[in-house]
Length: 216
Length: 310
Ligand code: HEM
Ligand code: SF4
Ligand code: FES
Image (cartoon, rainbow over all chains, first blue to last red):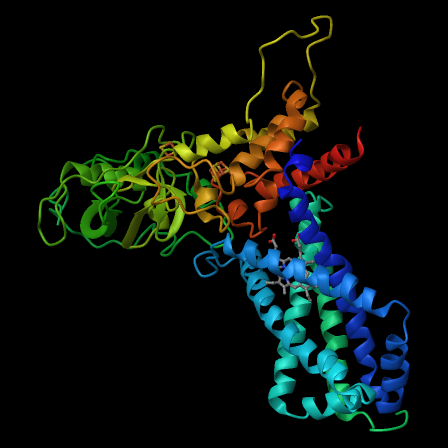
């Protein structure tokens, strides 16, 4: 039987599934957590960073539930990108542009996530002072307009990739079978993407406007 | 300049409803314009076809290629046409007197057509950069400069003729047939189908295997350089739609698991990237993306059965 003897189908579905959970779910959670930046350093460093750092089995969660699924999704995603030949200019339909953007945002995200993890999680491991005041570290970094711009682009690429990915995953799995259902669910995903994008943008701005200590 | 109708080169404006390509979004212009008056539909006879003065001269840019392995080149022609004509009838006119715009007499442009009513699928090509059947592309939808290229992704045989054998290979890969041989229970009544199912299935049975959807699909591999018909890479939207159709057939349903397993292998359903160009360009308005969504659901059920039994 093809689905057992030949892993192609199962691998593709795994790529799709991992994009939604855990990676997509983590992205939503991550944006929610960072939206609390505007409550200031004290709240953020204790209620958000320390609370998460104190989780039991944290390395298993970070590696097994986030890093490895993301790595699989990213590298299999690169292989998928290699098999396609987008022509967004010849066929200017929205879905075709989204097909192209899904690939562009995937590559952009890979670069952004590597940079982002290096300057937060890895930097925090190297230098305990950074980990102790992650809020101050991010505030200093984001005060540079270039860094802020890169984060803003990275954020919206991630949100676009996730929300468009939810719409296509629903087709891949057969949740939205008819074209009408696909269109309806597309609007739902657009709404979800805008919501996540606003939450994330709010979080980025929060780092700059929040008080350094105390609660706003 | 062709000498066919160049006697009076009258400039005319009327009746050209659309100067550029057919509307994005795939409105079936050929259906709208199919309500042409009888005098317009008698194309190909320049003396008769244009009493109201709707004739015009169009410039044709054609991408030619002499041999499957030779390099393509462009040639330009001028042809006197009337608004009721289509791209095939224009090419037939050109074939009578193939003289380029700069006056060179050249070999006739090779192209394919059979039915002239959008049911055989032979005549698909790139018209002004978009894949369409040329018999149902009316000149009234096109401007004064018309660019023709062979259907992309398929090997060129000569000029506008391509080898579409790969489409058939792909139908074979997905077992797009109903098995009739073998013993069946003759005590059962003939299989029945509801009107509703019949109406839904009928949409998929109209596929003419023209290859237009494959040409527009970013996941369908470019086989233009292949000398043998390829039987790998994404099977394309049309073959998937036939799986959708035949899985629903009362007898074809017996082989549904086999077809689903065929499209769960490399090049199958999950190689679709949901760009959905197919459904926008299909001249028969086949609901290809619904087929793909329905097959997504069927394969989800199938993989659960495979992994957990049942
Ligand atoms: C924040 C991180 C990411 C999230 C939340 C995410 C999520 C998703 C989701 C939900 C899908 C839809 C799957 C489907 O259509 O069935 C998807 C598709 C895709 N992802 Fe990601 N992804 C992420 C990062 C990446 C990265 C780093 C790459 C690497 C290049 C990538 C490449 C792709 C590609 C190429 C597709 C399209 C697959 C197809 O059309 O079959 N993604 N992603
Ligand atoms: S599905 Fe439509 S575009 Fe594709 S081969 Fe059939 S008729 Fe042509
Ligand atoms: S000639 Fe048959 S489809 Fe055009």
